[in-house]
Amino acid sequence: MSKNNKVEQHTKQEFIFQKKNYMFMFIGLACIAIGFILMSGGGSDDPNVFNPEIYNFRRIRLAPTLVLIGLGIEIYAILLNPHKKKD
Image (cartoon, rainbow, N blue to C red):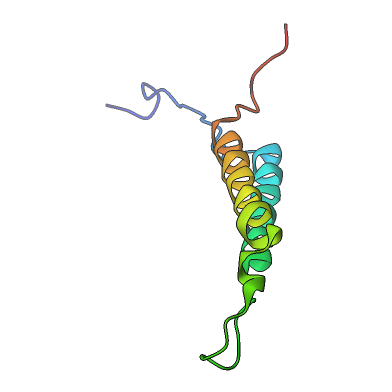
């Protein structure tokens, strides 16, 4: 085969994710990080003393909800198709 018979194929390589995907991924990671930060703390320095602050609204309801919302945003960011054309 000669070089003249060879068909040149120009393929444009693209990343799977675009800027929009990464933006949603960073938002999701931020929500997850804030949720884990809100869950931290509430312990006692003395192991013989019980601190009821460990069961407050922030640690039981708010922080896990933020983590789950962040995970939902991450799933959305992965499944988002930035090449979809609007009709």
